[in-house]
Image (cartoon, rainbow, N blue to C red; front, side, top):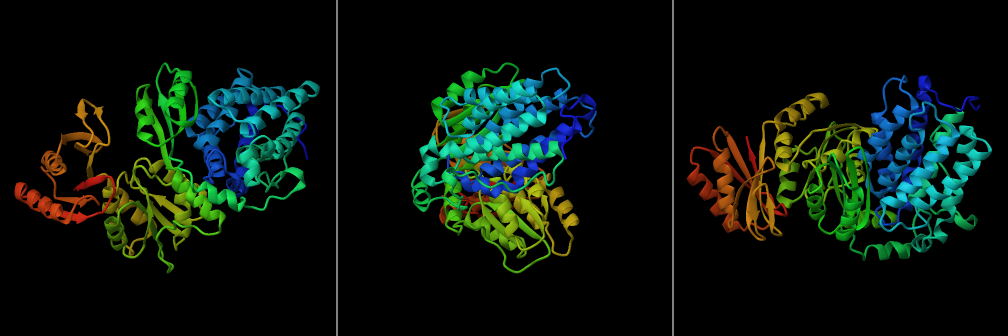
Amino acid sequence: MANSETKIPSGTSSRLTDMIRATTKAVEANRDTINALNVFPVPDGDTGTNMLLTLRSVVDALPAKSTESANNVAKILARSALLGARGNSGLILAQYFKGLAEAIGEDTELTGEHFARSIRIASNSAYKALPNPVEGTMLTVYRECAEVAEESAAANDALESVMADVAKEALDSVRRTPGLLPVLAEAEVVDSGGFGFAVMLDGALRALLGEEPAGRVIEVPMPDGTDFSGSVKADFVDASEEIDWGYCTVFAIHATDLDVDAIRDRMADIGRSPIVDGMDGIAKVHVHMEDPGKALSVGLGYGELSNIEIANMDDQASGWAADRRGSHTKEPQIVVEAIEIAVVVVAAGDGLTDLIVSAGLGATSVLEGGDTMNPSVSDLLNAVEAAPSKQVILLPNNKNVLPAALEVPALSQKDVRVIHTRSVQTGVAALLEFSTSLNLDENEAAMGNIVGEIGDGRVCKASRDVTVHGHEIRKGMAFATFDDKIVAVGSDPLYVLTEMIAEQVDGAEIITVYTGDSVTSEQVLTTTESLESRFENTEFEVVYGGQPHYEYLVAVE
């Protein structure tokens, strides 16, 4: 039954938060379908997941009490959506919450007129956020919904009336997208982001009307009365694997004075599919890059960075294609037999993988990932779901993977505990604390405690000339970092490794060095002898790690 009051006054802002929570439930109910439709701009099958995670960041920021006015709640939503935006769909979705805050302004009630204005602002902002907006996408759905909303509000500005008209138009607009974007017609799908927005509107309207469930499964509005098969045309799937997609790079820039237009233009110069928008000293950047480090370096020129996410779109596209064929080519190594507690670890390198499985006492599965190949939230969730236990400990082993890992517990029905391991070295140390004789809480405490006691270093060679914190590093030179600070630079990896250890050796009980895939067996022997000779009072373990990119990884305990 519909509520007779369609305004949301300051004393009852809980109705607004109920609508927001309902949109999240609606996207959650349709996430797999939204992912299955995802073919543009990259067929990586994560639009539904990115929209859901963006909405979850909004829900997490909602005030606990309902005494906040609607305008204050809307401002909270706008900021949290921008900071929490995942992928291009999440950043475009954030424009709606920005529009909601601007439309309400200083008013303390939400009306149909406000709602209509919010979609118009969202549409204008979304088109502006992209240097080359494409029709047949979520942008088109925004724009066409805004037109209907304005007409509806002019006739009757009751919120439930305007929202009902817009919810209907959203589905009709989505149905028309293949006629505007040829890639959708080729794949025989409609736009995934646009469908996700239509799903959101359905959930919000049902919450407004008091209908249950708020999150129901929505039939995909296909053109010409056809039905969505649940998959993408086979020829399109095959062709998608032939394209080099690069890395999806997302981060926030914080500064007191940000020129969002200039940042957007700069990202368009160096990358593909850039989306940049901002508010209140924050600019959120999404761009596709062959070298994600270049985007981050440019971003640092504007201010402090946060919320950094880097995803390998080639891996995602390959996984998406395999899923469309009904099999996945990159399943994590998993234990078949059911166990009390499973451990999922992110790592790269055959030596490290063998070590991790052995250290985990048969309870561990390894998901390939790390620097330059961060697994997505979907990858992590799939690995957790595949683990043979209802209790799972997740070790992200990378500070850039940690934010994605922290989203997994809320997405899984399992009891998932994330240990804040910032590197594979801290991950191995944590894993050595794992015991099958301890329960989940005890293992979580033991593994979490050891992480802060481990110092981690790494040695690698520069892929280009760069100046960092006063250190001039030329292409091909080796440099060492310890706890993310550059401590040595030189032409020889063993030299910079030795210099790094010399700074950390006092008070160290044991130092473990993991050798990378580029280090030969002769170099391993030389490394061992050199370290034991120079630091004869320190216990060393030199272990083959086989990790890419880094000649040496170091753990100091």
